[in-house]
Image 1 (cartoon, helix red, strand yellow):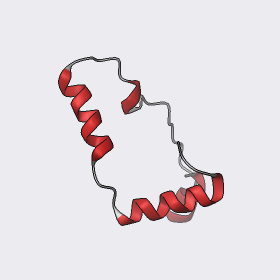
Image 2 (cartoon, one colour):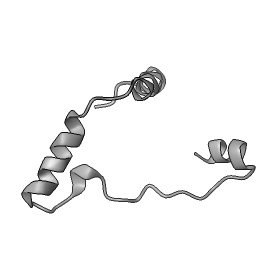
Image 3 (cartoon, one colour):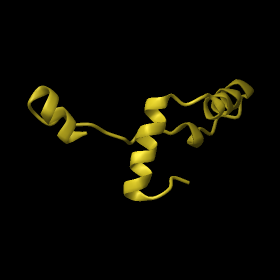
Image 4 (tube, helix red, strand yellow):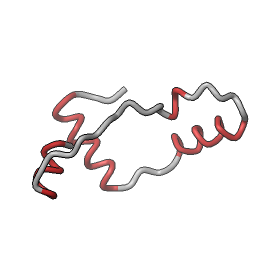
Length: 63
């Protein structure tokens, strides 16, 4: 991300990935669980699948 922001805006931007992931929610309300299930089942775009394939070629399969 640092390299990408350097290329686009001319300097690296500070980013954080410390947020809670969808699979880390402790909320057991039905709509929260259903939202996560729907997200997991949603179709992936061609661009996403291509980026995933590139990533897996470089780093191995995502589990």
